[in-house]
Image 1 (cartoon, rainbow, N blue to C red):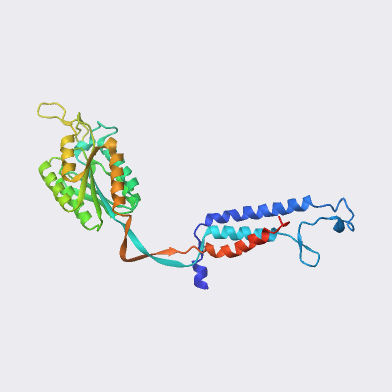
Image 2 (image 1 turned 45 degrees about the vertical axis):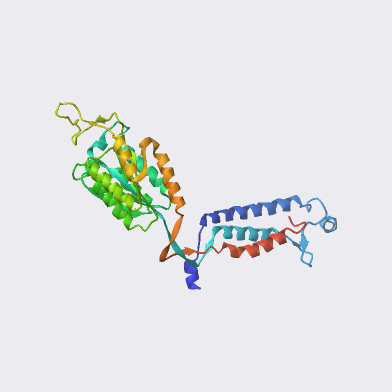
Length: 336
């Protein structure tokens, strides 16, 4: 009994706020009915019992039975059932999603270009946030790269934690400048190898890379291992002046500002080799729809091996038999 009392709680305790409201309503109804039938001030007390058409039931001694205590009890039982009383736990198998997505974010210096407002890296972060919102039960990981790749988060279903890390991701936080994609794809592939998922996908958000041959080989290798690579292009074909770390424009050998241009053809080729799709950042919702559809085709979840979680048992159903009995009693004629 001590253990039961220690574990007792309500799964939906806010329903308990309705109890004083229902009690006040019953009190008001009882007083209103009493006032409506009070003829004692008009008719002689000796004649009143013989003239009254009593709507209540009698207990055999002449006293009238009123429904208000029973109505109070019925409403109290209903609220307690809705509040979800619980004091026992069930062990149920744990499930994990079949889909695993790794987001690869380009943090090279060219991602500071502002040909898409407010700038490329900010739009890329917004895009990642949209993908995270659509992940649902899929496990999501995040890899950032410039000269070298870095795992920001391993595969996880804790999307909120991944979101909290997004605002700090910018090119100036990287220890060295560069734009090498192939190592980042290899890093993402390693994360997916440990996933044990049926649907393994990489989503790359980039404005380009400087190792096309190695990147295409890495994409082909990923495809051979069942990993699909989709690419989201950030930027415009016209490009924008490239800024240095000190905020000044980077100049070429001719003294003119260097332009960071989006090579759409190369990105489309990379997506084709990787078995995925290419979209620009404005059309990211279409790619998200494909990701969700692919995840649903492979099934919702698979049972974890030998893993179980505790779930509190809702005991509100135990209140239903006495509640139904009281409802039947209150439904008798001339009680309400």
